[in-house]
Length: 531
Image (tube, rainbow, N blue to C red; front, side, top):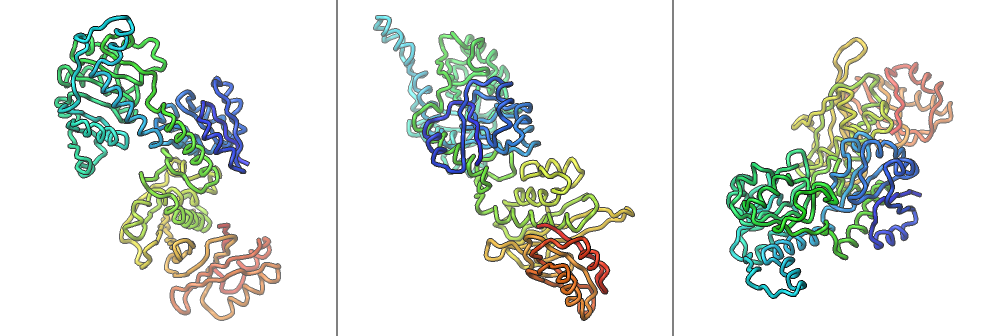
């Protein structure tokens, strides 16, 4: 039974979904101090948060059993991703569950600011009928500049185009082809700022984007620009925006998020040309339900090890289907375990190649899984999250190669490992594997030996001279010690040369059996490896 701690309020639909899961239990305890959270967390396998909880390195380290942190929402700037990665903790979010709600809130603020909805409402309540004070401007014909053209940015673009707006965007990670697909022209930031009538922010917080709206960028905007922010408050230098609003450079702003929340000391509060809402972007009934359900299902699948969708700190390319890559990751981990079991010295470099165009987008998760198997002896807590970091800490270089293998498998994972022996001499070994029937992992190459072996259970790897009688001698020794052979696969470089045996065993041979095998005639090397 997996235990999940929910430290911020989560929608009832998510709790109901957890109640339906026989292998999950949960506690929702909100309002915990940092110390209280650290005291409770060691008992839990997963933590689900919203924006109220800030899992820093201390909190994450306190979670001795913690495998997953789920952020019910899109922004993960409240989570220490670096610390989570070092600890091998998956950090997941729900990037699209509240996207429609956020896009609609953007349009609501845009319309309300342009038509002075809030002050007109207040005026009428005060007994006034001052229509001339609240003459607005239309969205039709205006240029909307979008900073960040991800999923939400594209939803906003579609809605703005329905109002007859010209939409342009800035996003250094999006190709022009994507822009054309959505009838949006991409510009660099300075050009976008110079053309925009209404500017809306839809990018993530990073060192590059924090306070990206500042005195310098505001100075490059059109006079009388309108700013909308339903993304993250830390994108804006609030002092600079307040100065722009007071000078008239910025005509008005619609703000749903703030640098610090609640914004008790913000210079923006109280300015007459700012429309404020208290972080309501995701606050629709539909979004709250979707966020809660998607989050608990993703966390449950991650705990079970069946899917790691929407993980933000693992090397999964966006849009990659985990179910598709999982068999290759399992194969890669087996290859890493085999390399590790055959080598007694630290690795210095690992070269990885995959076969087929379809697999190239999988290289990074495949490499992480291979490193996990490769380094498991020196770091038992290693997983797909922290494997690249642990490899770097141990001085292991990672390289992606092309055209090195000569095998004709379309779903091949090929690995050459480099190390130095006790004499300081450089050594290498090639191990390659493939998926049979698209699912079953097989080792198909070890150096110059071509085989078709199952990498499962206990495996005896043996090198011997290719002479008569070796197989019978080895089988007799194992039988003497009560060890049954499940399967025996053999490859040889040339008749009469040296052969390599891959022997799957049904039980663990005692030390005496391994010693007897190593002294058997014509046997040159024996290794027992748990796959």
